[in-house]
Image (cartoon, rainbow, N blue to C red; front, side, top):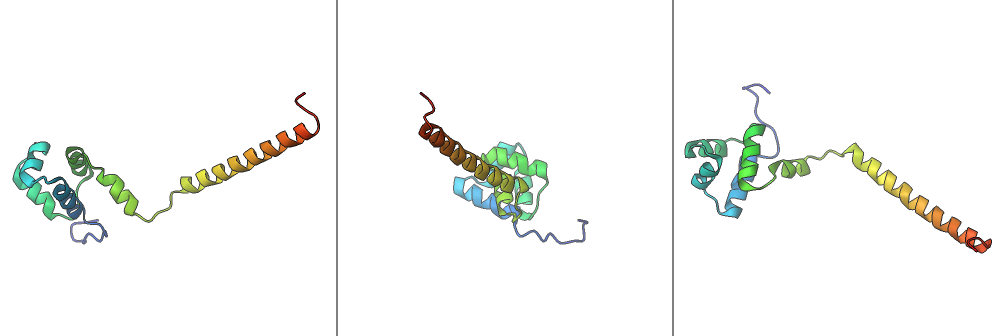
Length: 113
């Protein structure tokens, strides 16, 4: 994205940060002290709808809140690994049923004497 393009992300990170600050009852001065930056820098990023990853990382650490997870949860993208995990879980359940059935057959045939 170049300087002249608008940020069209549906999530405004500054609003999420403000929301968490309010929830924790932390003001800009307290956050600036936690981040070891000037209060004007806090006001500056609270006005921007996007932030650099490194800045968001330090804010997440300072507030002990995972903004990255919150953002990831809002992105509507299916993780291909999730469907594979579901397939494997189904296969495990099927194999357990098959194992139990085979145990019953062995018992009926007089096995395990």
